[in-house]
Length: 322
Image (cartoon, rainbow, N blue to C red):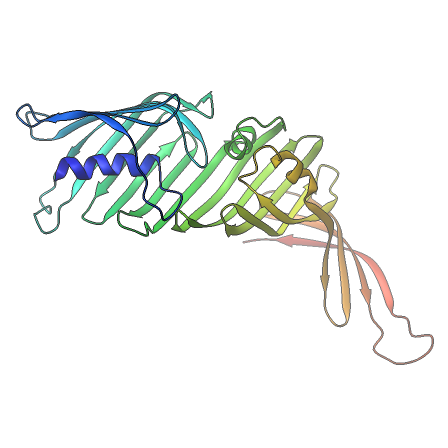
């Protein structure tokens, strides 16, 4: 039973079923109950191989390794060697089986590029996988995955200084759109693999994407995979000019991803009421907590008359956040 839970966890964490239909994975290998070890070879597709080995140690823990070669998932391609162990805490029993696991990767290629290695801790429970921490370079993942249909998940990914090129290549491994800078923020994944909800707030400072140099980009996005709606977002160029950023991305369209980025709508940042219309023309970031805005304000004249056209003015507003 414990071996089966472990094997299912490894396979599910690396490859989630994309639809409701049953998923069949051809494999070969076997289990030696006398020596208490296991070795299985999975072939999810052409040139894709996943070799799983497990052995019970003298202290009754389970040592395991997962050798992944060119595995293709919905979001990325990966090759790596993952090693780790499972132990059984005292709270584990027949009615409530629990296994605590640790893992560490070696020789990892993510979308064909070397990255910092993977490390993490998690627990396997009767119907749930709880990820306490899973670190990949400057990304940290936490959350939970249900082991039973419809495979509900609640995951949080924290980005802390992720290179902007690595961030773009996550959606398009062969992308030619180059940039400079680092991405910070949070991404949340909830729902089921076949109806995955994505919500994120991302920030990048002092960089570039293609021929666009920027001082600050703030992106708020949400949607159901593969369509992501970008809204309430803005970009401040190096010269201080500010504009909103909006549009819909199909992140499954890898070939057209760069074109989708270029096609995002960029409009002047405006705020409107029944009386006022306000355009933010420039924003200069003094430091992390303060900025200066150059604004144009037009106020409607509420009095009726043939010559009452309203008034306008150009002003400067300084803001400090605490």
